[in-house]
Image (cartoon, rainbow, N blue to C red; front, side, top):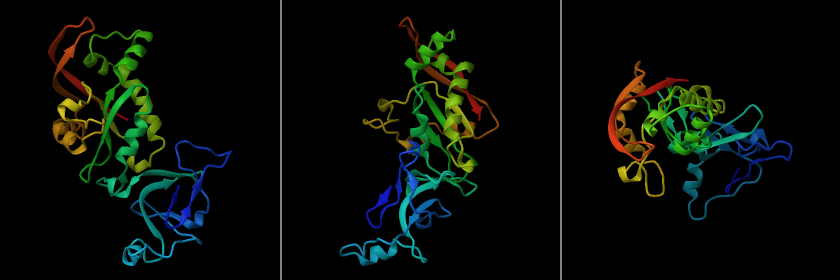
Length: 254
């Protein structure tokens, strides 16, 4: 990790490679994390100014001389920097803590059993939560090997055994997160996110604001004391038949 303005700040030493980080901080005295989670740096080698924009250069420094990178992250107990996201893309919770939704989503999707994920939260919420889309093929293979019977995607997604499978992988991600910003509740959605439903862009990116509006009723239940939410879902059975069913999805605590 480095900046054009000041240079290199983190590397992975041969004996300390950690794929969860962007490297070990070379000089701890030249890097700090601000109260709002911004990575701020300084050093002996620094550009003099931006060409033709001296005012912009000055505005990128704190009153005590630290360069504001605009990036968010934290330094772990081993002295490695975990890069989260651009500071402007962080989401603030009710407790004042900011969390990185896209970072968490990408880490959760490392699981072979999770196809997609929407991490939610805002200034009125006490904690982040996750709406999970299971990977039908991989979870289906796992279910057959572990003698978990199912009929449809909806049925499979709501199996208690599948919830435990997904829980395990979310807990692994939680271990890497700030204690104030861990996922506290999650739900396995009864359907996949779909670009044809305007939930995703054609390149597969989540349309966050639209999704939060579309699933606002479900989100309200997630942040209540309820543990189930009723839905009507289109289903396709394993023999090719299709239909519609009314069912419940379950919200689980972590």
